[in-house]
Image (tube, rainbow, N blue to C red; front, side, top):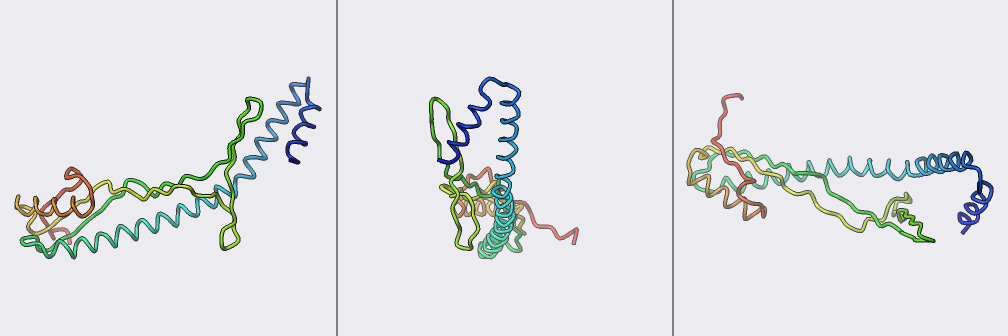
Amino acid sequence: MMLNKSKDALLAMCKNNKKQIIILCCALFVLLVLCSGDFFAKSAEKTNETAKEVYALENELEQKLENFLKTVAGVGKVKVCIMFDQLEEISYAVNEETDNDERSSEYIIVENADGSEGGLPIYVRAPQIRGVAVTCEGGASAKVKNEVTALLTAALGISANRVHVSPYSEKNK
């Protein structure tokens, strides 16, 4: 409400002076950038935390798959590498208002349990698996390749073209 009164007063002062309007718009833009800095800085911190969580998820999932694939006949020693296509995607709630054919929108800010403020997430999309690479001692066998590919596509819900199985080699160790 106070913003509307301030806006009306500023517009009345600048009614026929284009130069003042341009300066006012620039000042409002700078103010908007300065105010949104904290919001986006906190988003960057959350992105770093999310990246660490994704890497931890990758490692945990790789280890589980390695242990699982060792139980398959003919696989032998095995290494698994999983790649995700992106970090989690978060959409934030936005308050949109239309006033005299003018549209404005702003993020809805909420106070977190720790006292900090941030955007209100309304949708979180988990990271998607881009592909899985497997090396195993039985990787030269078509039967083992097909078995490993079938198990991974079923366990991870991905298509077979996202799985590659190769023979295991310890030459570079």
